[in-house]
Image (cartoon, rainbow, N blue to C red; front, side, top):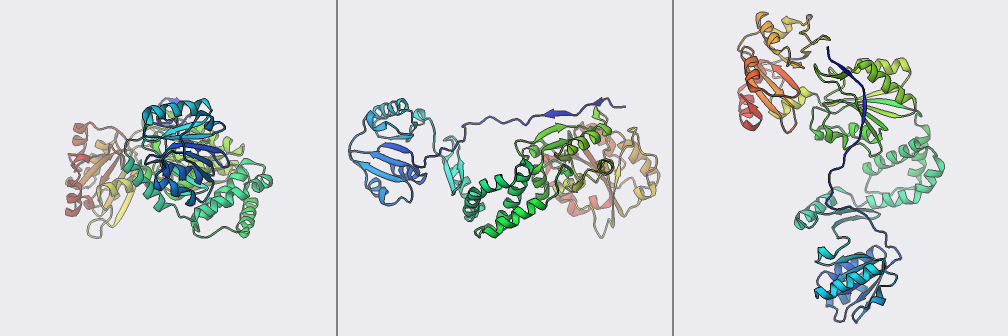
Length: 484
């Protein structure tokens, strides 16, 4: 009997940052650039593009720098054909040193800091308060990218990839959001309603990014938000077997909407990164044959949170409807009058089979697929398994949670008619970086598993479809994931 444990709140950690990404508003503020080295023209254009009033001090400006005032679309640029003085920095919000002489640049940086300006020095990172990165401009949507100087070409490639993914029309949607925000806040005083409006707004922007939003969009979004059901609710979400990229779009939306996320031990931590930062995360772990939270406690917590108006996500490994106790949780919500929906996920069986390139069904070998559990409430082999179905040579059988009873299960299946030479395998940590597979037959797989000494969540697959020549060839191409 496993020792009960209590649900506990967890906090999402933040990995170390090489730099702090911040955005500096410069509209209508004064900026100063001194010098005319190769990076000066681009830096002046950036400052002006942000709406700054830029004064440039350069005794011998380059031709490219001379052309900048006629090329800007925002802000202003005034060119002074002389060297800088400390008095020139009075009132500057941002200052850039672009001089060739190191000593002159050091003096400029010191004077700029004394004047209270944020300082950057071109090609002198040791003198910088802030550094420029690659930029994706869909203003007012702006994306900044930094590699902390380690790989500028890599950063530029990332910028190009992001630019390809972000439609230019997003700039019009973000501009509309800026114009509508105050009105939406006045219309909806509750945080949940405001968030609901902006979620619908975002969905519409992604669905139709290339057109400009209209007053009609605003009217429709306001109406949809007012008509939306109020109060708390529960969503059972399938997290898939481990690989975060297997999350569905609907699962991602549920995570973004959640106020509280109740998750199991087997849920990959990377998946929690998709939740909004303000969401509470609570571990309600249920581990096979180990300390687990009682299901009744999980049900009560889930219902009580929803009754306080929270949007609760019950995040489960794999699919909630496949050996995930979803039935008990759905029933608890129904009895409590709490709305509850289900977002299915990729099952462990699907993920494992896909990662191995093995088909679970095949018209020449398996016309039926069955999922069974490897243990009952007591942790023992279930007494009511259909052994005739397990021994059927035209079936692929997937056994969940098989580790404790695997040897007994296969031995009994053989005694009930399963051919000893039937192909069988166990996948540990399906779809995760440490995935490993042990292959064999119904007769010898248990011994191979014991010899391999592997740990982690496991799934057993038995059937002739696993032994087809093309499946064996595919498995054989991944020795780093295979233990025989």
